[in-house]
Length: 240
Image (cartoon, rainbow, N blue to C red; front, side, top):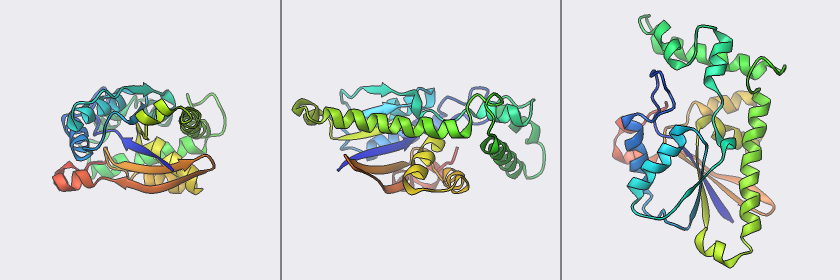
């Protein structure tokens, strides 16, 4: 059996105009994971979504792990859903998290209202069946994520016949987002859409989920492991 480690990105710049950048804490979270994962070496095959927060998480992870010559393959199939498109379709004035936050920032129980409205926006997106309203339907997002996973597995299995490849690559690490990870877990475990959204909300930044696979099998070994953050202190554990 070979392993695939799904790494959620570090804390992004929630509330900033450009969400798709790691915050200072997000950079440090990735370094902490790299330092914790000292056995990470050049025999690991690395993939990343094409979003900045994915690639930055890999870069700071490498800093923490120490010198190695591992390169990364970019695969847009592991990108998160487009939250800007989802929010804009729910409320025309919202063009990202920053606009949504601005509306509720001065109101009582702002965090609860933010979470509730984002959940409603997600629910509207998930229930939509007609193409054209959204840049990407929920069903298309699911298909994209699962297709990307099987492409990586297929490429690995095709290459494993080569002794030189096996000498260099034992496991796979994919730097991605919470929504993508949840969809892959849903696919393997047969979860409902509601269960999938629920587990996506539990994923911590830089948490690691491990899959096991061979020619005829794909399973979940563990999910949402953030022990590297726990050891560093509770202040490092974040959801966004």
